Image 1: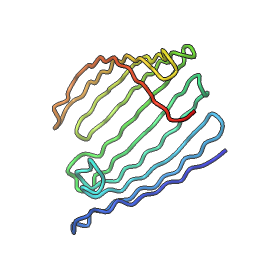
Image 2: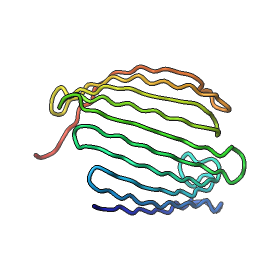
Image 3: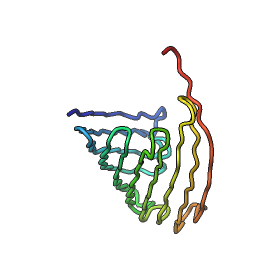
Image 4: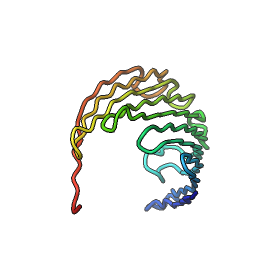
Length: 169
């Protein structure tokens, strides 16, 4: 059994008092990992934060090393200035090792309110051809009721490879 605590402060380099902070913790025991994370951001204090907001994320992961994993996460965004609706995200992803060299991964995400509402998901296959060489294929699709972005519905298919390098043994 163990635990991880984290905290950070974000300080802007202007006179606009754009600071932010976050704190979180995780507890893990055997196959289970659970955690809570809080972020308080003023506009511009944290990268990609255009509006002052508070974020709370709760997650749980259960896994059997090298065989399978499942992650469940919920995040709530509360925007202080009313510029956007408060938003909830729900995310589930899972992996399953079909064999020692092949893994299948899937994810599903649901968003309500905010800049868009809708559902998105992905399914991918990863195959380790050699020790440091992996092939992968992925299909991802979203169905969003777009409010201010130009994303909308889209499906993407991708294929690729990754090569990792090491130094020493």
